[in-house]
Amino acid sequence: MADAALTQLIDLLDLEQIEQDIYRGASRPAVVPRVFGGQVAAQALVAAGRTVPADRPPHSLHAYFLRPGDPGAPIVYTVDRIRDGRSFTTRRVVAVQHGQPIFHLSASFQTHEEGLEHQVPMPAAPDPETLPTPEESLPRYAAGFRDPALVRRLLEARAAVDLRYAAAPPWGEVGAPREPRSQVWFRTNGKLAGALDTPLLHVCLMTYVSDMTLLDSVLLAHGRGGWAVGDVVGASLDHAMWFHRPFRADEWLLYDQESPTSQGGRGLSTGRIFTRDGRLAASVIQEGVIRVPRA
Image (cartoon, rainbow, N blue to C red; front, side, top):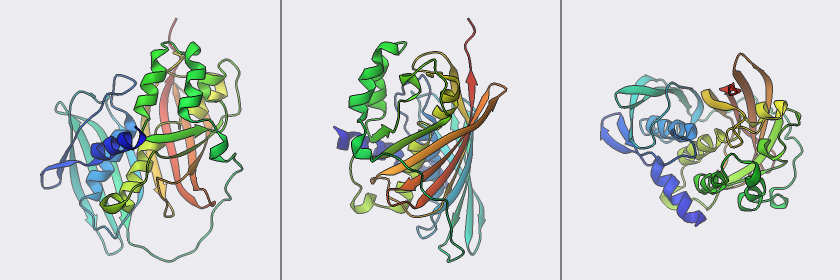
């Protein structure tokens, strides 16, 4: 089941080329009635990467979510070759559905270079093997969900990823504000091998997962459970990532997330992703709409 889900996710990221620098991606049913933002970001990065030599991996991306995506329709990705330099390559990608742009991404790629090296230390976290799996943890919270069927739908939507919370998720302790910090361990539910085992695919899979939990820290600060409970409505507005060091998406990665502020119907979250041996693999920043429903 897990390997099948990962195969489906990889198929989702395997875009169809319909013209030079134009690609088409399928969509999949989502837990909410719009395309999952991580899917669009990952597919857009795949499209950009298809136009760049394999020895130039992405080192950063900056993206805006413009309109909700329709999960029942394909998405067309158009790549603009902004720059091809001696060390850096820049691409811009626009995702279109029903004749309208729904997403915009700029990505930069770089050849390997030696340089100054330092990083922050990895924070303390429990070992992932000691934490409950999604199949073990999610059913515990079904009674508090606005629709108990969301548990099954959430498990299906995330079946390609083994994602384990280091502490109770926002919907696990609703009503009690907590420190605006969240930690999850994640890896793909299956190993990548052969032709699939490419640095670009690992980066795109990380991009896919990075949008799953980043705004949790905003909810924790206010004791809100999120969309599953129904006490807030929200959506991602923008998303930025910097890829620092090599990693594998099929090995455990610690996603350490916190929210420095929320205001004006928006919440900001930052994240750092570490390999299990303590190397800082990526940094993430996202702002999202966080609104309390009117009574």
